[in-house]
Length: 189
Image 1 (cartoon, rainbow, N blue to C red):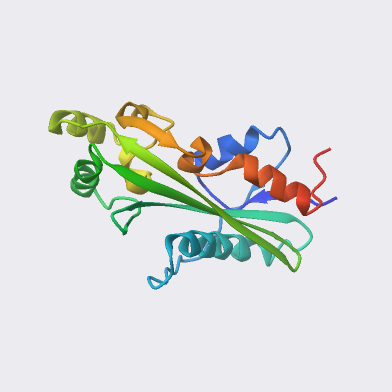
Image 2 (spheres, rainbow, N blue to C red; image 1 turned 30 degrees about the vertical axis):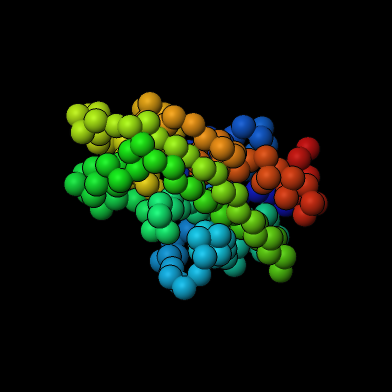
């Protein structure tokens, strides 16, 4: 029977996939991400998700392999994970009081079948004081998050509103993923 494999080391993606109440295993992709800057954010996240899934799927062609990638886009600038606390603070200062978009691309590979999709969610931050930002950066939470914040953690205090799928911002649009797996014939029983 075909198994489900998550090609990600993200604890957030693991937690979200566990919500589907189906068994899966994690096999981390060892691929070096290649970003083509000429692509749109939608294309970039789907391409990166596909790269991650392909790196694992080549060894497990009979299984369903899921790859995912998340980017934050503010004023046409791609914000990945910050390199350090200084960069995290600068990102958060730029996002303060403004809206940005979070894109999560997902790829499912099963044999020769490749299904890619993305979700886009608008996030608006409160006006943040420098001391609020410093306090948040000091938690360490921003350092492994695209855009320097985690909406599912302490970073939720920064968010005024979202327009779209909350789980996209966390890193895996589970509603859309569930339906895509159904379309591909994955057995949930």
